[in-house]
Amino acid sequence: MILTVTLNPAVDHTLTVDELPAPDTVARTDTAHVDPGGKGINVSQYLVELDTETVATGVVGDFLGRFVRDSLSDDGIPSDFVEIEGRTRLNTTILTDEAEYKINHNGPTVDSSAIDGLLRSIDRHDPDTVVVGGSLPPGLEPDAIDRIARESDCPTAVDVGGDILRELDASYALCKPNREELAAATGRRVESRADCYDAIEHLRQRGYDRVIASLGADGAIMATPDERLHATALDADVVDTVGAGDSMLAGVLSALDRGATDEEALRTGVAVASCVVSVPGTDVPPFGDMTNAIDRVSLSRRDSSSHTTGD
Ligand SMILES: Nc1ncnc2c1ncn2[C@@H]1O[C@H](COP(=O)(O)OP(=O)(O)OP(=O)(O)O)[C@@H](O)[C@H]1O
Ligand SMILES: O=P(O)(O)OC[C@@]1(O)O[C@H](CO)[C@@H](O)[C@@H]1O
Image (cartoon, rainbow, N blue to C red; front, top):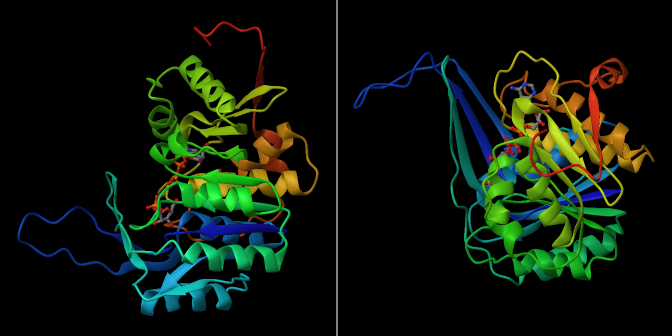
């Protein structure tokens, strides 16, 4: 079972307008979605749709926290949250014909004692893998994630910002940076694919056993102790990319949980993400039979003796 930890959950509010309002004017819309969110929670939602056993944990509070808890329960997503006094945040995405705007609140202040409650919850569920996803709320530092990794009795994966990746120092089974996070985590320029491979290798040497770098429309790279693979993204009618990375991680973890090879896991992640970019916000589309999409993901293997330029 895959247990997710979201230290800073959110209610995701997604609004669609023709264009952003001019200053001091009001835009009106008929199209608004409200979804429970935060990266770990999203991973759990996608895992359930992929028929993989999961429990979503994290820290929630007040009426927006209740919304997260109740929505997950209504959607059949098992959860076990620690309740705090502060209020779970509201994150806003505005979609126009031209662009996607996202404003994330920093979240409520969380005392480090919340981690004790989370560790008890992890212990109760006895997972095979723990996934920590998303930002840290005020009051928590990266060492809270290191503590979860060290004190959970199973491998830990992280999908956190580059500034946090840079500071973690426990051992991690997997991390999933995007291009900007790779650059922030390593302090390197990450533009070409060769830059990505270099930065990924740097992270692997820092204690991340598998690194999966999601590169938006350029697909994704997976590096393990044995191989380095690049998968191209599938063509998709993109509505927005909110949740794309989370769904890719869910696809990879779900496949690895079934005993798939790294290659199949990467293909699955990319195929799942291509479905998710075609729906608004963090809506969970029906994945159905993914075999066809998984087969269409084209993959190339990088020779371990390759130079660090070109590619
Ligand atoms: N324009 C696109 N077309 C097709 N697939 C895409 C596109 N953008 C993203 N994807 C798919 O989604 C995956 C994850 O995207 P991305 O790298 O943008 O994640 P992310 O930055 O972590 O996203 P988020 O933080 O919003 O969840 C990519 O590896 C790719 O497979
Ligand atoms: O502020 P964070 O924790 O970095 O990211 C939170 C968030 O943007 O990530 C998810 C999409 O990946 C959304 O559900 C949520 O609003």
